Length: 90
Image 1 (tube, rainbow, N blue to C red):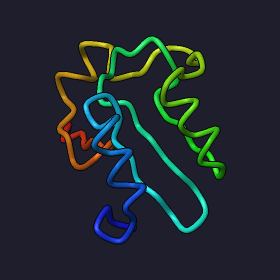
Image 2 (tube, rainbow, N blue to C red):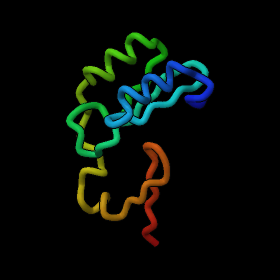
Image 3 (cartoon, rainbow, N blue to C red):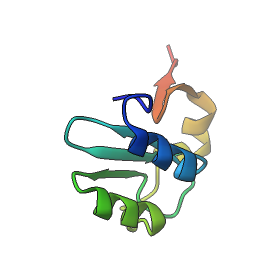
Image 4 (tube, helix red, strand yellow):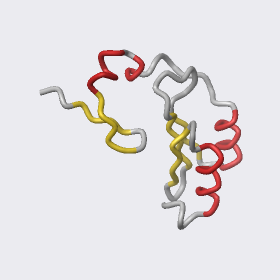
């Protein structure tokens, strides 16, 4: 679902877009952190909009570190899209 189709999605992207990449499926709200070195959960997935916004404001703790925070991975990763990376080690 695009922000053109959903005004609430556009509002969330405008408000939280610097910190999170936000998208919507038919039944889920999804946010992916834009900084690989964030000290909280890198991805939020919620069916309930109120809980989703609460977590955008105060994200739950992460479970470990993102591989992208390690220099070796970050040096080889190329941004492929919102929250997606491509590794071209061949």
